Structures are given as structure tokens and as C-alpha cells.
Length: 230
Image (cartoon, rainbow, N blue to C red):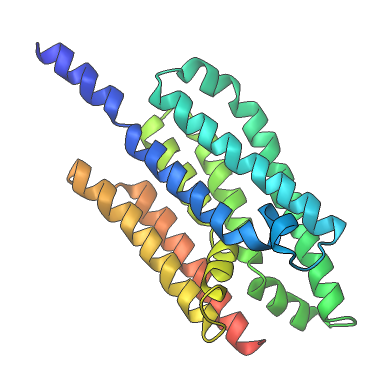
């Protein structure tokens, strides 16, 4: 009987992460609905090819993240692990093309900018969050044999991608103090994930402690750069 209950508890542990994956994917979809996913019907501005490809790559990542969370919740860890290599390759593409997209935006909006201004604008355009995403994914892949660390780092990596979606969500309602609202939402999302997990396991896991601190720090730096370069 005890063995049966233990198995049941172990099998139910990944389900909160599946729910988190669904919530994060929904947030990204709604945030980019007007300017990307539903733009054909909402008649918003024309997208550049760079932005269009960037959106496709990010969509593939979100779908893979959802799929991986679903596989773990269904106890298909064997397939989940086989897809890990593809996930690592896609994460590299997310970072590489994301950096190219930011660079293209900086060149378009600040032509002829010097190194100092380019660096500040790179941070303001969520460049630090993108690099942090890559670092968290790398750490998660290194810890892939330690599921408790791996899944938490992957969740933190996904949360680190939320600022652009939050920015567009806030802009649906107001164009005042968008940067401050996004910072608040990122801090709230990070703390909520860590506190819910800590409440469930009766302790704050180190992956959430260090990963969450990194996400909040990256977004504070982004906020400062955005205020300095409106």
C-alpha cells in the first residue's frame, strides 16, 4: 500500500509543471496574438521577414516545451530524453536568431550608435534575458540526470522569455509605465513559481533560488536600461 502511494505521488509531481507550461504558452500566445498569431484577422502592422522567422522559431520552442512537459506527465520519459538533443539544438537557434533579431532592431532604430549605446539598447531590448535563457537551458541540460533540478531550471528558462509577451499584454490596456508593469509581472511570476513549489515541497529548491534571482536581476537591469533609453 505504501509503495503504491509512493508511486502515485511520484507520478503526480510533474503535473504542476505541465500546468505551468500551459499557462506560460497561453500567456505568450495571448501576448503575441495581435501582432503575430492573429495578425491576419486583426490587420496589424506588417512584419519584417526577420521578425516573422523569429516568431516561428519561438513558437517551435514553446510547442516543444509543452510537448516535453506532457511526455513527462504521461510517464514517457524515454521519448522525453530522446527529444532532448533536438531541444538543445532548438535552444541554440532561439538564442542565435534572437540575438540577430535584437541586433537588427538596434541597427534599424539607432543607426550609427556607438558601442556604449548599442550595449545599453541591447539590454533594454531584453538581450540579457535572452542570454540568461541560454544559460539556464545549458545548466538544465547538464543536470538532465537530476530531474528535480532539470525541470525547475527549464521552468525558469521559460519564464525568462516572458518580458516581450508581458509588454504586449500590458500595451493592450495602457501605454503608460509599460516597463514598470513588465518588471512587476516578471517578479510576481518568478516568485509565484518558487513559492508554489516551496509550499508543495516544504522548502525552497536551490534551482529556484539561484534561477529566480538571476531572472529578477536580468529584468531589473532591463528596466534600468529601458528607463535610461526610452
